[in-house]
Image 1 (tube, rainbow, N blue to C red):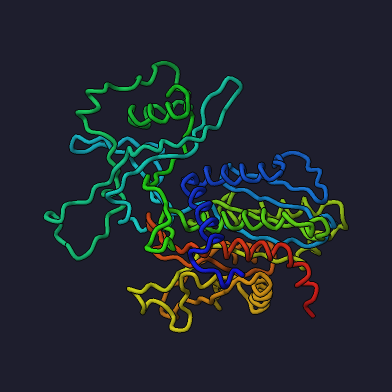
Image 2 (image 1 turned 90 degrees about the horizontal axis):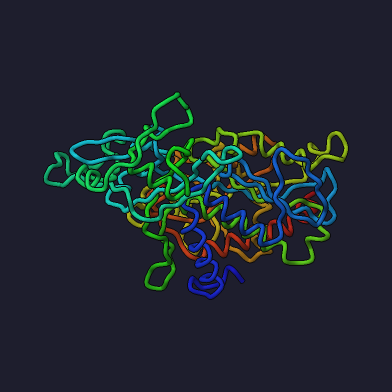
Length: 470
């Protein structure tokens, strides 16, 4: 039983180890989506083109991507008919980070630097004194047109050293100016001169595709090498910085997970894992529902993008899956559906006890956290909470409750966005963690197993539970 398992139980340790292996590869939303895609294809899912015709069949499994940074996977139950419901668990692939500016060359005091933009609400002081690398998407000129290249330098090549305390006038606080003081060092002038410069931008007719002059030759040369192309072939970049210090299972009893991007690779990983786990039994072949796991990009900046939860992409997919039924099949399906928004949740911090509401203090190993906010920052209702409690009872997975204090600001998730746009009954949940939005976050090993089990049971049992509500 999941509720009775100890933090170091074999099932929990195995699930946590597999997640950490995934996390260390999912260094950007592009890499996370690729890792998810690889898992789905190994499980027999078929990729669908967004712009092509879909021939959807019962007892079959599919996925579709958007911008290579968001993915929707769905398994069509053997008894599905248009107008039947959807069982949906959603997460997001992005995390607060630093991203390379379109024109990145900067320099000062005989150092070459790379200009970066702050993405999301990161704790930027934690990015100092780290060994940073760069990864992301490179678009290049190919023989037959534009090609996409996924790259990961892996080696530490960028650094943001702290100012020595002897030179700091305010030693009690540290709030860096994110434009002037958050500029990674790439190389010294001396090293650049010793190693020589990359090929200069060719002269001649203006070509807007050529971005060589936008970046230091050493930097664009590194990216070209990773992409397997010439610097002149690079048309555009979407690059992310990340800490090369790998995530790990840590602690005296190996009960913690320490690493970057737990918010929200935990949600993405467990949503997909729950979907895959739910398909191993025979019940799927008689399920009248479609089981879906969706992982969106850009949640950390409001979800307002084509690949974000606020776009019409989800509705378009659901409507296509409802095609062939009555003219109102899609609308009929909404009343037979439910969505779990799987993001992370704040565990009670032992050093900041006063920051948490006295009766709502999620703990490590205490179970999946249900997040409630009467001002609709979370989409949980009494009905959706009750349904999840029934799922948790059948799954033997413990639940915890969280609300924020009345005198504290409250974050939000894709839950209220999708509930509003689609009219879907929604419950907001998450796994407990500390140091949210730091470059190094902290969670428990139990959460991966508990969340996966909860979501797997949700997929298997939702139709029956909803059908029995009077």
